[in-house]
Image (cartoon, rainbow, N blue to C red; front, side, top):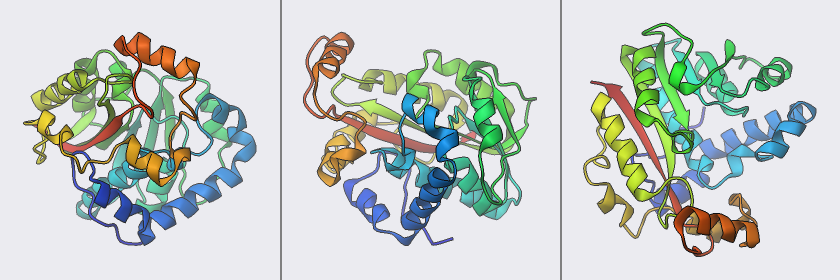
Length: 279
C-alpha cells in the first residue's frame, strides 16, 4: 500500500487536506472505491438513492476514510489480525478496503436492517467482512472486550445520547484497544452539529477516553484557526464534493428551522477526527 501523508488528529488543515488528495495513497484508495462501485452497481443502486452515489468523493469523507485507515494501520503494525467494528457502517467500499489492506477481522454494524441483504450480495476480492449486525449503537450486540478497534465515521453528530453510545464503545473495546471517531461540526449552526453540541460530545469522549490531541482542551481555539479545512475549501476545490447542489428553498428552510436564521452558502462545516484509548 502506498505510504500516507501526515494525517494528524483534530481538524484538518487546508494544506494537509490538499496534500492528501495529491498523494499516491489517495489515488490507490480512489481506484479501489471506483472498482467497488463498478462491481456492485446493481447491488447498490437503490441504496445510493437514499444516500450518495460515491461516498469517497464527499467533502469530509475524502479525509475521514484515510484518517481512519492511518490510525488502524498504526495499531495493526503492533498487533496483527485485529478484530474491528465499523460502528454505523452503512454500505461503503471502506471496510472492504481496510480488511483487504490489513487482513483484519472486520464486523459492520448499522441500525438499518435492510442492509443485511445488500451485504450478502456485495462482490469483493479478498476483503470479505466477517459479519453484519443490525442494531443501535446504544445497544451493541457483542460481549465485553470483543474488539481491538472500534471506528465510527460521521455518525455521532446524528445521534442524541452521546454518552450512552460512547460507554458502549468502551464496553466492547479491549483494554489496549482504540476508538477512532470522526464527526462534522456546523460552524454557522445551520447543520448537525452546532459548536456547543460538538463541545458536549468532546466532553463525553474525554470522560472515558484519553487522546493526544489538544482539541478536547481548547475546541473554540481550534475552530477559530483560519487555516482549517471547511466546506468552503471543498467548494473551491470542486462543488460536487458537497451534498447540497444549490442554496434552494428546502436548504434555506432547513437552515432556518435548525438555527432560526438563513445561513450563508455553502453551509459552513468542518470535521473533527480523533484516535482515543480507554482510560
